[in-house]
Amino acid sequence: MLKPNNHTRIWRSIASAAVVAIATLAINPGDVRAQDAAAPAPAPAAAAPAPAPAPAPAEAAPSGPTLEQRIFDLEKYVQNVQPGKDGDTTWTSNIAGPGPGHNAWQMVSTALVIFMTLPGLFLFYGGLVRKKNVLSVIAQCMGIAGLVTILWWACGYSLSFGVDAKSPFIGDLSNALFKGVSPYAAGAGYWWISDAMWAMFQLSFAIITPALIVGAIAERMKFISVLVFVALWMFAVYFPFAHMVWSTVGYMCGPLNPNAAIKAIDFAGGTVVHMTSGWSALVLCILLGKRKGYGKEPMAPHSMVLCAIGTGMLWVGWYGFNAGSALGADGIAANAFMTTTLAAATAGFVWAVLEWILRGKPSVLGFCSGIVAGLVVITPGAGFVTANGAMIMGVAAGVIPFLAVAYLKKILGYDDALDTFGVHGVGGTLGAILTGIFADEKANSIVGGLKEGLLGNQLKAVALTIVWSVVATLVITLIVKVVVGLRPDPEIETSGLDLAEHGEAGYEH
Image 1 (cartoon, helix red, strand yellow):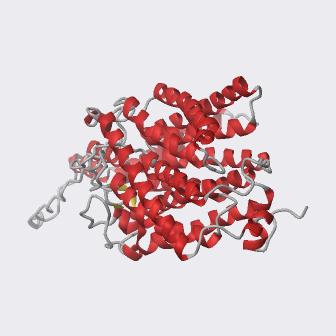
Image 2 (cartoon, one colour):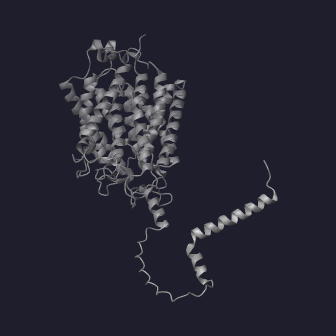
Image 3 (cartoon, one colour):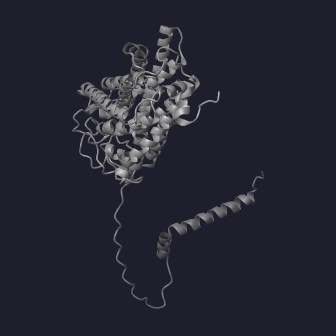
């Protein structure tokens, strides 16, 4: 590279000075004119005309918000107005409309929860059944996804979260056919995400909840019977509980309804999702009866590989389930992400160690069951408990559901094919109770106003959920039995549901 000589340096200095002078003239012409006016000038040849009067000054434009005001408003918008208390919904922002960042997180979370069902849950369940029935559980999960989506659009969303609802038990039809559900308008009670994303996020929960019941009745219930049962069950159980627990006027919505009769807390669905599906599954599998050959012939999972893959998908999807229930990418979401991880990993390890101690070998099925149990138990408390609370809940999740699956089922003699009750019913109940014990204001500021009497309120919510789910499922099952029947013919059950009900086989060998 050539070095400049002295002449070059001199010319560059002159050019730089010229540029500075020109820039000064361009930027401050008033200053230059003032300097010129002060310099001596030759006397004029004739008297100059009187100067015209100066124009009146223009009216000053109203001042906008200061930089500090704008920053503070943005802080409120992203729910970061109180250090350590992210997500405080008592603050409002002057920035109109839902936030792109929070909406983006809700889109991701919704996709993750749908990913839990399709394909996570059906691979988990599909691997656990015998190969002659693998497509039947996949079809049931897919059928439920389609049916529930249609019901949700038609009236389910409105019955759960209708904007004009007054009843603490059920919504109204003000948002039927998604009337008024806009991708641009802020959601009722959640002004930082759009109505459309709130509706879609809640739809993903509505899909997976009845799909969980499939595990209890696998290999022995007709496809049409499953669909009719789910349709009735959504109206009798799911829509009312989504409203009671998560609506701003809900009967058990402690965080959002100051007039709630039961001021319980359920961060992501311990009662709404796991208890309702788990206890309903118990009733349904008892009324349905045992599988042919149950207890007399082996009914081992046909593919633990599929089950393990499904478990991994469920775990990943559960971050949308739990962290997504913060309804924003904030500190509470981060806490839920952390507690979900701790509880799932701990429960899976504890379950496998118990198997190792009691049965001599830790099984992959044990790891899978424990992981799911941990995810279930932490669900109601994910955004309310600290890391230490999550660890304790994880240990409990590895012990109590294990005992329910290994011993309670044998004692009571019911055929819960894939242990929906043992994992989701028992796990959801355990999680709801432990949330009342370990909920901590350090994790979520909203706990502070609800901590007094919280355990008692959690127990009331648990009792109501069990009684409602059991009674409703009993009535619905009897109706379905009369209308379309419950079980396929014995010959079909023996040969498998895949070919008889769907005309396909999961495997060609």
